[in-house]
Image (cartoon, rainbow over all chains, first blue to last red):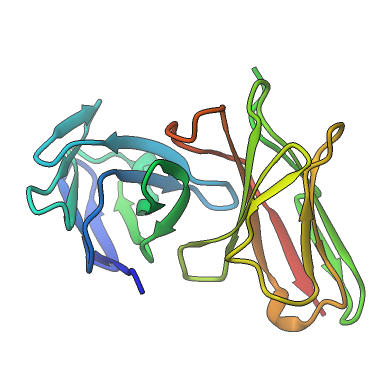
Length: 113
Length: 114
């Protein structure tokens, strides 16, 4: 079946550092989504990507839709303590419905002030 | 504009009891999804509902689990005769009509089975 593999599994960085994480798939996706989950809360959408090669920013966050459509990258610049959380990539399990999603296992980010 | 509301936030049940989890979607959203998250894992799709209809329940366990989204009132995820393996966080998400908009998630119900 389809799988999304995220790496790294966890990161522990100093405040102010840049962060990169990625997500790879065994199959092609037409949409990539990046969510952040804070402890005890539900995932919140950060960035949605709809076209291969697309590069989209949301403040200090930048995400790219890989040209092969089998991967995506998320970068966070100048990290701050509130960036702490779990970052998930996700893609639709069926085309035309971005509600039925498969999620990666997450990248846990910790930021040291 | 209130977000997706789930209750209760925490639910403790003994083995064999029933668990009822409620979800009120965002205003104007007619599509509801339920996801389950085990510790240290990503979310896994369970079921997709529209008002009075189950559209896709391919992620639901075959037994003990059921979901509904009645014409009036919240969506309900019901787990009968709970077992310890049902302990997880259950998230509801909603989406406006059209199926191409990203999901908005609630803050989940954390079920603990003792």
